[in-house]
Image 1 (cartoon, one colour):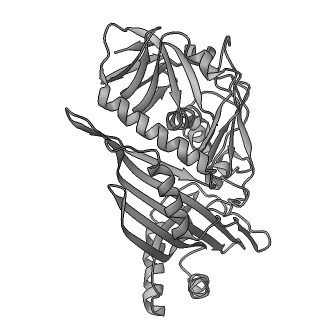
Image 2: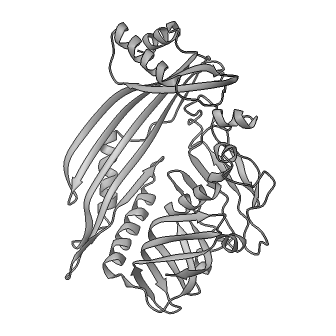
Image 3: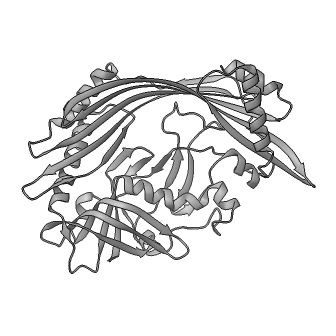
Length: 423
């Protein structure tokens, strides 16, 4: 199929460049209801995501337009030609400032080591590990596991010919607490790049503890200002929001007035931030444009060290592209988790999302579930928001020594935001 597509794209007079992304997915899936296996499924798919490029001028301005289409089955030569012509016409309407496609090196491939165990055997072992932590009234109502092997092969008109094969294990779970008064549930999603049964056990215990807290949660009272502890997925969201304006596109579109060398942490009395972007593994070696990936430091001791992003916007800024990398890496801190919890605080369990606005100096979020420590006792609470000044938070951060590795983020498991307003 790649040969057929390459031949047809090369023959087209209506385009000036092209890129094919072939994605092959092999997945083994298991679905449990009330912790009983209901069904298993094997999935094999192969799709071709084709992008065509058309260079043209309008007046004295040069543009590079692009348009994409997806194929999941073979077409006749005439059907394929019509598809390309349709995309070429669409590309001629897109007025992106001119840029060059990525130039390929030699043909290369990367293969991540397969997980141990046969897929169905592995899913059964993982499910059993989670279910061992349950009780009659505290269990997983729904538990779905997905062992997936994905191979991406990209080929372009500029000589890119790269292939990578990556493994992942995903779990969608609904832990529930069936009490005398009512029944409550939570949704949990897990993404694992390695097999670690101790981690599975720990995640199961945390999920069941969280839904138990959700059952007992009440409205928070008589708290107007308190320290807030964030963890795990909320930290991924926090740091992603914190650096998004420093992408090539953000800088090009003037979403920030900061430049390399400017501090994002001022008058620091807490811990400094060090934030890198990295591939998810050494086998995750290139992005969709064909840029070869390597780690890049974005924040160095609280100071902007580099911008980051795609080939297109890197060229608009006149710098070498970092490529689009999926992993935020934050250096671990100096603080012990126990020390963060000595004074009254709120530890967030479930947050509807965190918002940051560097220009209005705002940070905040709507809390679905948290644990409040009043100095003596712990109380599950829900149904409120917190907010504060992002500049003050960044100047007095506490970052945990304990780290976590989840989808898209590796770094401190906990951070402490001081003196947040509770609304």
